[in-house]
Length: 230
Image 1 (tube, rainbow, N blue to C red):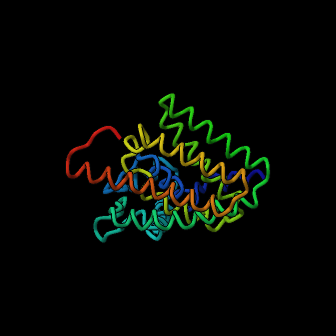
Image 2: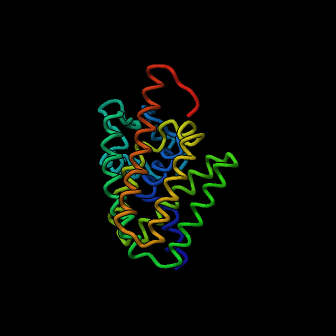
Image 3: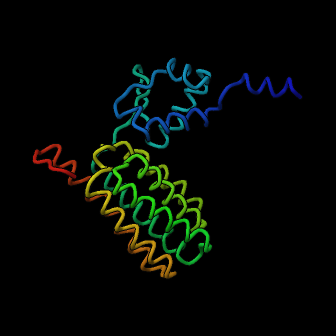
């Protein structure tokens, strides 16, 4: 039995696990759009075989996160603002559905947890802790989707999030944007605590649309000048 365990350990990570690692590097901006994915570097960092790394590239290419070009290999795929717009529209619809279902289906414990996370994010806004806010925000949205009981939507939204997660992270998670997001969360939590599905869906859709509007304004400012504090 011990020999079997040791043999499995020697095999290293699966292609799925290597893909998860690369995806996490993209989400944390350690790998950025246009950057080449060097097989030997990923093998060294993950312990995966060349075959598993190439399998991971194919998986991520199917998700739209990686581009594979003949003779040039794999690289992190960028997202145009038009694609970002489409991704946000899809998120607004899907997360809106989850917010409505959460308002009706969530347990009392899940409702309290959602409210507690929103409170913690407000503390981050006042304390100037954008990275902590970003993690709590991810936990908040995940809790809402899990509480809605829709694993399919949760999986889809995670994949929709990845291409835009690394866009100007430090600028996105600061200043007025965080305060606006905190206000949005309060409205959603109120609807959830009132068990008002339609109000929760409407508030969530507006929350996602506000995020897209902010990114659009930011992109316009970056490319056309006139950037102030965001």
